[in-house]
Length: 257
Picture 1 (cartoon, rainbow, N blue to C red):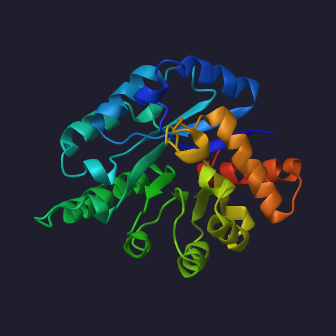
Picture 2: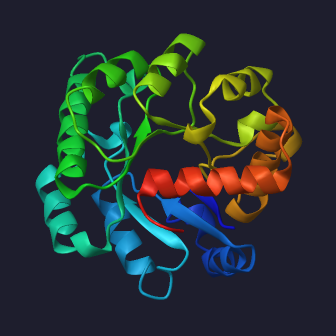
């Protein structure tokens, strides 16, 4: 069986000194990872970093994060995207986030424009989508109704029980990260999530204060802990959980791991 890290920023500078070690670890532990981008620059860096030697463990997602929606050049992004479309496995990280709004009130409207453009790309090329939805989930759920998409994942799910029920009804995948290990709220959400829609991620190199001493999460260590937490919370064995997550990952990606 193969365990998938459904959302990680492998191109981030935090990983630059030991990225090759991560690739080796993924292979040794029978893991794969969906590495997302946040703008045109990170997409270009990903294309340089992930070549034929890494295709066995890395799925490359291309997207513009809401934080960069107002500053990135869509035309340049499209050029890079279209020139490398055969190397791109999904669209992400894309979405909406009102916390990046400024006093002018114009950034969120730009996020909505870019988000819709990215969804159009995903619909056109029939690839899975990884969505950032902090503070904007109701709006995102409404927008998604206008598209015919393959696999859609709400990364690092932070919605309410009501929003989770709507997400499940819409056949959306829901991803849980390392916060599941210590959050009772996340465990409660997990137990209410459709089992066939659960995915796990690290969102590396996200950092954790306190007991994690501000270290970045690393795919090959945190992911096993997250998967084990899913097993305990659902009352399943680790092997049963690993098989479930593999089936769900293949359903999300529409391909065999």
